[in-house]
Length: 73
Image (cartoon, rainbow, N blue to C red):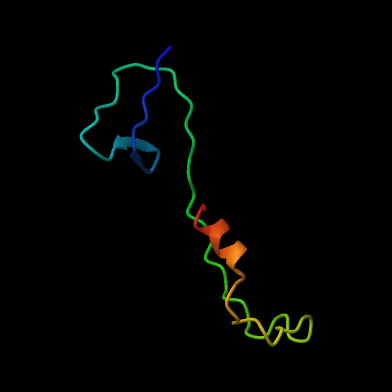
């Protein structure tokens, strides 16, 4: 068994290849339709306000051993 992946357009139930790839004259196939992701609304600013605090040393340099670990040393 071999597999062929073809990007197609479907217009009123008619399937046509989107690129230069030709569809076979006769075939048995499974069709998966990829729907575009729904557009989500942006999260409101301050959604987690009051749930945590940023420590004072948040922007402090990392310890040498942690830096070496990131660098693979």
